[in-house]
Image (tube, rainbow, N blue to C red; front, side):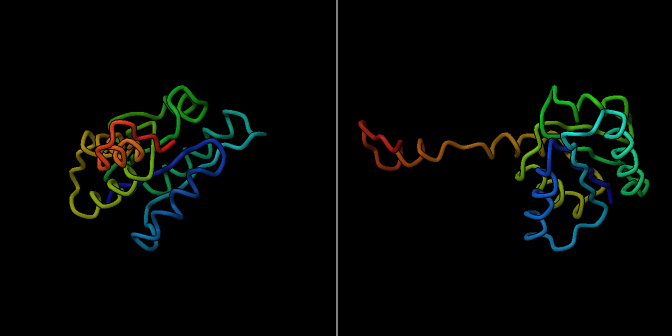
Length: 140
């Protein structure tokens, strides 16, 4: 089973694990690393290295980060290699899909996971207006 490490500004990654646990129960080989306001990049990098080592069972590790160009992503770029895949812009749909995919197969289609993350961004108001077929639909 591939390992997963979530890295975010603040405690977002802990919240994502808490939410995903509602679907999957206890999550094995999943760690979170929170970048706190008073930390420096060296401390963050050491925490991420430790988390990767903790979840790496020989099948690879996916590190999901919250924001491209943000400190957590920039800090761990040096860790990306054939065993550690860094994906940024994480959201709950992509995390849940990755959790499910690793249960079904050792061959993860990361392009599909990323697409699901993107497709999970929906303007619900627009859908409601389309369903109402009202040219003057204003929900907000």
